[in-house]
Length: 186
Image (cartoon, rainbow, N blue to C red; front, side, top):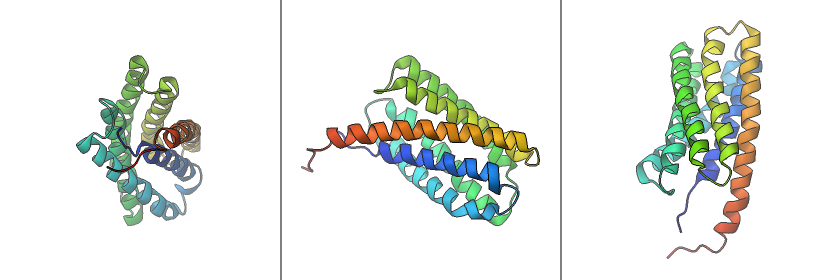
């Protein structure tokens, strides 16, 4: 039996999207530095778990690619966004990174559905596609922060997608607690 930390990665994704929704809706124009600790922590967790997954492959087969790669992309975005906000740098390149990463995440979501990967491929695919769409929307929202409807649309996409990840994460916690209940180190 393999042991994985996918549940941590899933709930971290949900927290990251909730923080991003709050940033877009309430903090981008004022008090942006209040988001720095949250951005850095979700970024660090995603980078650590994502890199571990892509280098050690703890999951069966291509699940490591499907979940590891986007987790690294998420981690890089949030960690660097936290640093960028903290130091007052321009967020435009972070937005460009987000948009390109978002396209890849949408592609992965479609492929997860087509291959019927996991116990809930539709829910996972929708969460991936929503995350990718939010990441693409981040570019115009970051580039044009004074246009509130773009920011609010991005925040809405982010919070709806976070709800999807919460569902996927809690389903995974439910299943993992049962399947790993009798596991013991050898």
